[in-house]
Amino acid sequence: EEVDGADTYTVYISGLDVRWQRTLSTGTTELPYPENEPSLSIGVAYEVLVTASSDNEQVAVSIPKTINVSDTAQRVEIQLAARTNDAQ
Image (cartoon, rainbow, N blue to C red):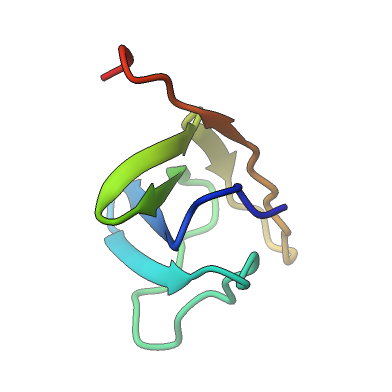
């Protein structure tokens, strides 16, 4: 689901053997795993975080979600929570 006022989303993936990020324009709410990034390893935990920005300022951020990779394809859904001006 899109975040009102956002013009970009940034997806961060990090784990033992993988660390990358991708920035997407609004209107895009899915990201296939990039072919040019290292594959996720079975049995390893990875953290996924998504931010929404407007004019290069964060307007929403997800709670970091840990995924454990199994030998089957997974779809990970992440909800963004609106940031307040006081939140850092």
